Length: 332
Image (tube, rainbow, N blue to C red; front, side, top):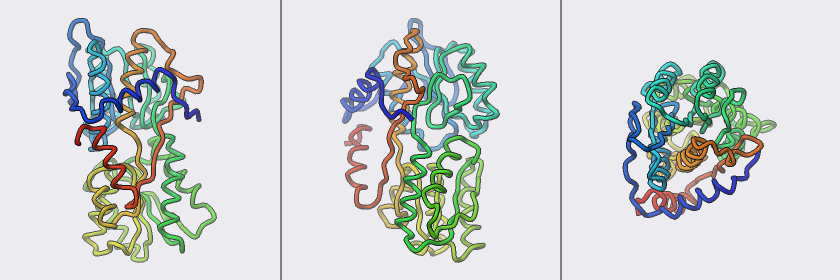
């Protein structure tokens, strides 16, 4: 995969950091439904795959991009139940309101491909966070999810050098980002003494996400490791482990930086997490969509892949990482 950013997008990346320490104006429409752009504005949208807190950071990136481009109206839409049907309804609503470009994290890339192709025939369409590689999207902008899975697998091996049984938790295993991350974890631990028993899904139901962990701790009292693939899985795992009085007895590896995950790393309940850069997903997607809406495709690389790097966060680098994030988000 091409890990180089185009010159135009790289300039956007630098501009994003120049905004560090500044408050971000609320976007014209950042709820779960579409609105029409004001006269003279170009409307573009970012559509998530669920309403997780993870997307709050991505929204900040879209707001920062909009602030730099007064003629652009950004719509940030989160399907309220994390289903492909709701996602389709939301995108159709955006098209009816005259949006000129969409970045989307597909819920079910295989079954949504006909819809993605239909939308792509009408307006510029890119994928972000999770890809639909066989669709007619113009490019993917986000994490190399297999590489992120490899990183999580290496954290797991460092946490459990003697090996042991492991359970993996995710919202939907058929989402491309979930599939690639899980495969990355499997590839990383291949040949080790670690054994993945199963992958438990929750359909983005946070209550069920915790229940899956509680059930695992009961059914497998000798479980050694728990891996959360989507952002809310980390906090759900920690909560269940705390309830079971097993903090420190099982090692936890998570993804992203929800508050519960960061608190878990601080307390030692979580060994480490693989963080993405959702701020950049939002910022760079809006910048690219604004170009595409004008007919400018120069920001799309030949590979049709714009990869944003990931990072492993543990107790030893948590403070410096959070300081950087708070500065970027205008919290310090």
